[in-house]
Image 1 (cartoon, one colour):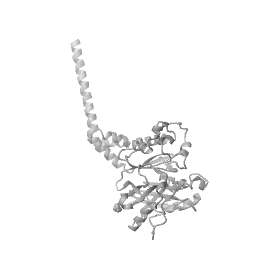
Image 2: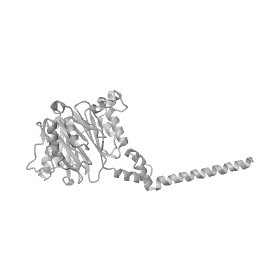
Image 3: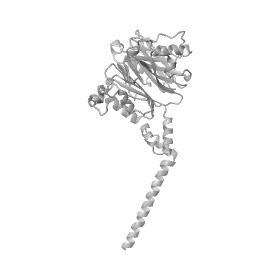
Image 4: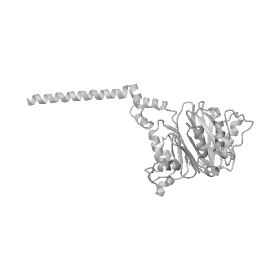
Length: 391
């Protein structure tokens, strides 16, 4: 009986092993050969998980890349604004990220985002990590690590980053529920652009004492629609690069939207320069409106922004930028968030970002604008609001 029992046990074990082997083979077949199954599964994964899956095998890589390409319109962002945060549930004094609450939001954003960032536009009110609200950094050596390095470490190596420090920031929450202005209270925002078919987004640096075309990297034939410019205070001894760019394009028969601000510092290693981010391509459309110092009530702001609304740009996949004088804001309007709230009333589906600066670059530039000459491009006590649509 013992011999028969042992033989039965061996037979049972062999059958179980065969069944297990068959199940593993079926799973391997499903996970490697059934293309449609993989597509359905991978569509549920965020970009970071898809990048991990793409390293498993060639088939997984091809499916992951296919899914990522189908999500190429997914612009996302991370932000911290004291006024928005103070209105939510109480938060701990310190959070486990070098850049505090902003860094934690960036971490969550990258963990959840559906697209791989290819370009990043970063505005910060601080130059060192220890100043960020909620930052655990107190050591001077750790604090000396530039914010640029922290951002580079968080983003993919191929991501092109334009980062500047400014007197104030404007940001919108990812669910579009809140938009607020921070006037030196510690705001930060990183806007993350994926690769998009028919769209070119790239960064250029313009030395303020040299020619535009020769050193900017901007190509005339690229169908440039918008250039955002960030000129540091130390670079204002000559005509701002944004103004020279607009004049150069105009002489070439083009009138792309050029808007920007005079900022505190560029966080890149380049000095005496204007940092620009260029938006070009057939899918890109842009328009801008100048709110001068006479626009001093919410009703007047809304009337002016209605011109921007009537420009007819698609709002389905759009983004707004606001470049305001540090002399405007709450002191100017005697109320908080007047211009950003007005924008959100007119464009409820469009996130708004921006900076308070020490001067504004831009003008009213609408699709129906017909210029005999380039309007004045440098201003004070104004706000430039720019709308970019990706169709």
